[in-house]
Image 1 (tube, rainbow, N blue to C red):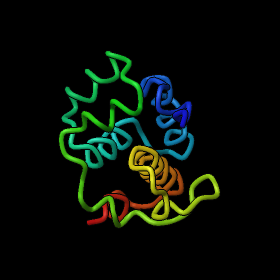
Image 2 (cartoon, rainbow, N blue to C red):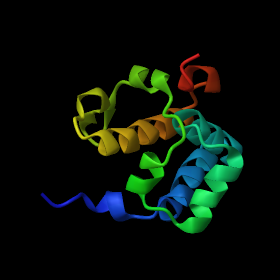
Image 3 (cartoon, one colour):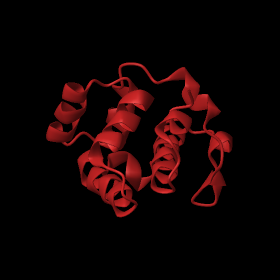
Image 4 (cartoon, rainbow, N blue to C red):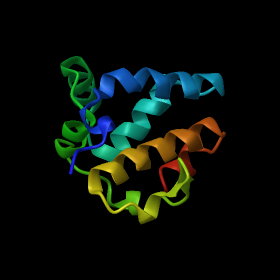
Length: 116
């Protein structure tokens, strides 16, 4: 079975879209980075290293220091599919991130986004 194209897409190529989506709704890059760090366990320096290396999405999530156990609380629909129903682990992590960025762009508080 061939992998979905997003797996081999560099995280760096999509990252600016996350930031732009947030900024269009009066949010900022720092909040996007906080969400990514919360989800993956990367430090800011490690995140920047991954961006500099142009790591693909699959590697980005596979190398994540500690995927946050609270990510299982992320529910809802993204791209017409329920996030919690996605069976492929890497795709589910990608969609978790997409859902969190959507929540940021819709004005949810960081406390709610980070499931505190």
